[in-house]
Image (cartoon, rainbow, N blue to C red; front, side):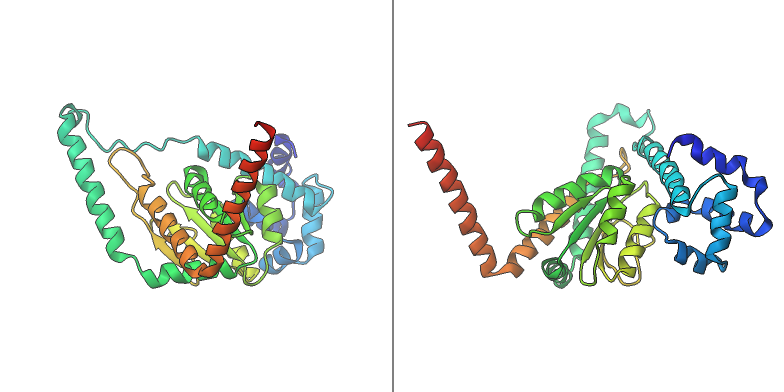
Length: 294
């Protein structure tokens, strides 16, 4: 939908009945929810009939609930774009202190060393191996990371894709791709949700819908109250705040390496066969190239 479609919602607000305004107020307070909710589910949540919701859509100038969702989706994508363009600099350093560059850099190094030690002290080998088994058992593994967290998500995908045939990288800001991927989720599938400040609230909707579909969740984040943490998720907390940047991804990258190593260990002889097949492919390609260029 075009941008003015969402503007029509505001322009036609006064055309609604009191109950319809209450429904719309609920949607406007949580615009990300509308991108994923079905008409029947919205009817259940708001305690009104589907017919009432459809009448509200028509009064707002939409032919169907699907068109209303498309307008909200376009609006949410614009919000995400604005969110992604916000500053990621912390600069918790007064300009006067920055004059002593070597001393400041030493403080940053000491802080990073201490943060890394705390991270490894709290890591559980059993939990890493459990996550690795969940990944191997899943028919589909979705890896989601918003904004700069997508750097970690992409790295995770690159680590897993040579090991398993079912890893899928999903960008939460791409609503069409998210919806198509979530609809395919089945019980036993697994979602790896990566979220660091600044948080993107729609990530909570993604993990909640994934759990609703029966998928397991691994959350990689920095706080227990992060939007990707649920009562049933397997949670990894990585401190990423520094004095200069909002996030430093050295620890999340280390965690990805550890989980991928756990996947290799849990694969056992399957990993040996995979390596053997990879060598066979490389040998075949090299031999073919040699024959073409004697």
